[in-house]
Length: 128
Image 1 (spheres, rainbow, N blue to C red):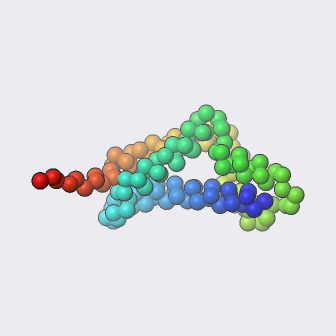
Image 2 (image 1 turned 180 degrees about the horizontal axis):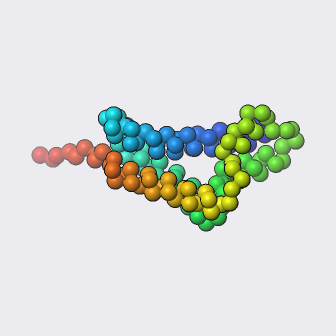
Image 3 (image 1 turned 90 degrees about the vertical axis):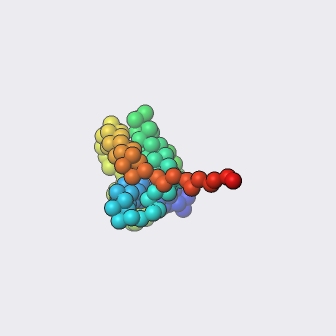
């Protein structure tokens, strides 16, 4: 059960990172926050969102969801209160096509942000 809880914690971290990026990038552009233009951070955000969207489009649940379910299924003890509450919050009983459509819209929004709030260019060095 500890491994299932660890996977749930990782899953929550990915979800929070993705949601944070969707809010922080446009807000950061308005407020002048430099971190929202860090290239590796933006690429990581797009890769995670793209992975989630791709899995949904091909009709698969997130691999973290599958791993957690497989580990929790074999547990002898009942689901802890907090884990059950979080599970109900992030796992909705909807058809996969709903998630695929939602994730594609979110990915499109993130790609639009990449164009509207581009990452900073790397500093160029001049050679003598």
